[in-house]
Amino acid sequence: MEKIILFVTFIFLLSCTEEEKKKELQTIKADNFSIDLPQFMVKRTKPTTDTVFEYEIDSNYNSEDELYLAVYKDAKTESGQDNYTLEEYYKFVADDLLDVTLAFGSLKNISTDDINQLHAKIFEIEGSYETGRKSLDFYFMTAVIEGKDYFYEVSVWTRIGTKEKYKLTMENILKSFREI
Image 1: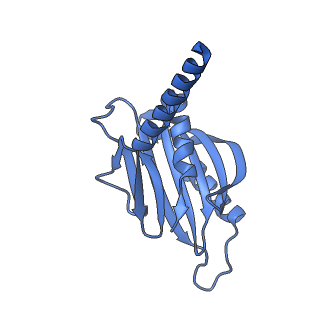
Image 2 (image 1 turned 90 degrees about the horizontal axis):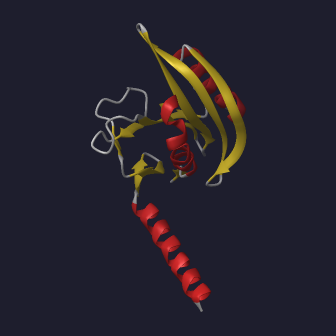
Image 3 (image 1 turned 135 degrees about the vertical axis):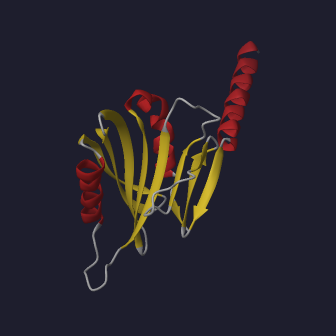
């Protein structure tokens, strides 16, 4: 009898935990896609000009950690050019992160997957960003996703020191992307 009570209690606690996790998410809609983010992420007040949107960790939640999200959208065809392939777009994005954004970096864990029925390439980059005299080490997890008419780059990044803390959150963000 005690085993049954213990089992029922365990199942109840597990279901409560799952409900709490769901409550902690917010679904953000923009243009023709949506993505689920933790409640502790807020829209950036000064986004860069070429993103669809950007979010960051709310400083009221944690003023020490850094966690960022940026979503970019590019048409599959450029005027007069052939369609890009997912592989070509992935190479463009990875090269841009490695050669333009970071002063030094290494590409890791490249995989091909489907994210909500859309073909995607997911990869990780660890690298250094130079800011004048200072070098900051970052961990990026990026999905390049092929939609109907667009390719999407969904990049989430944090400092190397908080990589393990946010890695699962970052993966869940990428896997929540949906074209609507």
